[in-house]
Length: 280
Image (cartoon, rainbow, N blue to C red):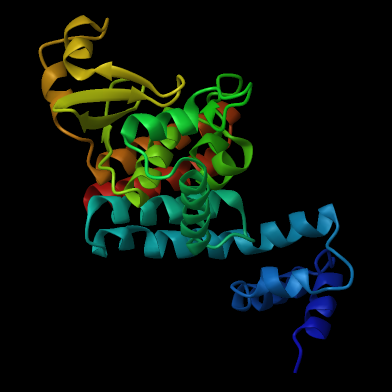
């Protein structure tokens, strides 16, 4: 039996005055939430903006509970790149909304890698950074979101892929995960105040500022001459950022972003995910 007639009935009850009815609708939608985007896509009449908002509100508790329950499953995967991609997929899908599944991120990254290969063939780390972040013909595929630097959306890789802007760490993660598809080893550098990428090319270690047009800087020069240089800087640059450190920094960015917006409920949720990461 088609789910569409039942779904049409549920949609009519989204704003019912009875809390009992709304709770029943929430339970029904939660059960079908995996297939819900496809079912809604098949409806003759698209959801209105108010209906979209109501569906999002009803599904939010279940989505939060599910992410808290499954959050650390990235630890089960082998290899830091796979772990990072899984962690980012879960977090980005949650930030992107109820229509998005975590598996969708891998598909989007695969498609971007295919586009890059079709245009330039196999690239090294520098060429890939130029393809992603350097202006070409008046256009830049991805750049730093300097206008809205503290927006929570900057930590959502789906949003970054859609808009072409992000913060330092999301752009570095994009660079790394795309590089992995080209067989290029790209790591993170947990640089204070401004996350960087870290690559070894021609027997030299470079730091890459993905936020600023994919600029390559010799790691040794940064360690000696950067204004934030201190005795521990060389050790920080020498050691790649772990998956745990990268995801924790993203969660802390989201914590700060929600604090700035006054979204205390969202801030508390990000803190719970951070605690799970640190305790596991």
